[in-house]
Length: 446
Image: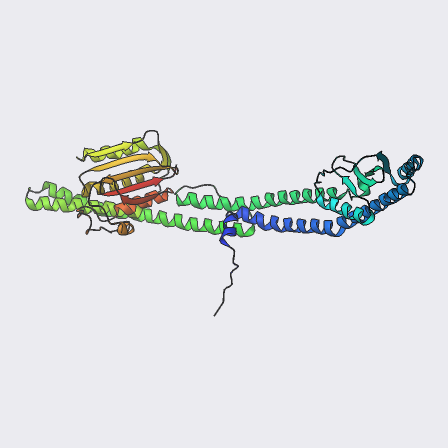
């Protein structure tokens, strides 16, 4: 018995992860690089920069402690002047005595608090006097003040005496390297993902009956998938061509004897039996038309952008010429990409279905809030139970328990209409109508 192990990822984290292949591939590359860069930077600061900074701060604190001790040994003005000159020449320290001053009480925090802490600890270890320092006021100097007898000893030291000032260059190189690696990763991943996207677009276009000039490219695995798709496409096209030729032959062979029978009955003496036979022939011809329409599908018709108002009004007008009364609510200016003949046949099937089971039928065309358009056929008939909507789409399903007996239909109208809608990237859905009966809605993308 095989045991399958699966990495558990909390749902919160899973929702935050990218869903596209491009995003996930980029995350797989960028995340390890970012983690490595952070780890290297942290190790550099912790093991090198901090150590160097601590040593420098300790050296500066030692020089300041010497200056304070020298002042306390001889606080005379001449000694202070001599101390300042010696500190300037040998230690690059600028020392001045401020008589009667007190240490400042405020303190402005530095951007790099760890550096301030390093200098703080070094001065605390070397000085017994109260002190204050500021690393933010000057860009190249540090202002250090020590409380001594009679005032404050103010000392200006070069910043590089206390800090390893080249650390920002290392950080800059790390950031530049990360950005460069990210740009290269985006470029290569995008090229690979684009090949998969083109394959998906070609498959989607073929599913809608459109043909495009698609050539395999990309990684070896992607090209293999594309070659398999092209081989499958060729087999399906060959099958459709063979089926179309067969249907054309069947249509001709079936219609020929039907035409002879209709001609013979037209030449026969009128009688009730002849009229009944004419009705049977008409029903048989209608059934054959529906069978062939269902088997033929879209019949290779090319999709094109059409004005829905004009197309729907034409279908409604054809139904009204047969004696039907249909209400219309058609929004003007709406267009959709579809196959006109297949759409006419599907909409006519929905209208005929409504007229066969209801007294009032309404056809409406309106834009959808989520995009695209919706062509709905409502009726006030008995409707279909919601739990049997999917069953109604099955070929040859007639649902006689909930709908009136359709004398002409063979249960293919809804199946043909849904095949047409799905072939265009849309769908056909059933719902309860505001008129009380059934609502059949063809939803097409914009």
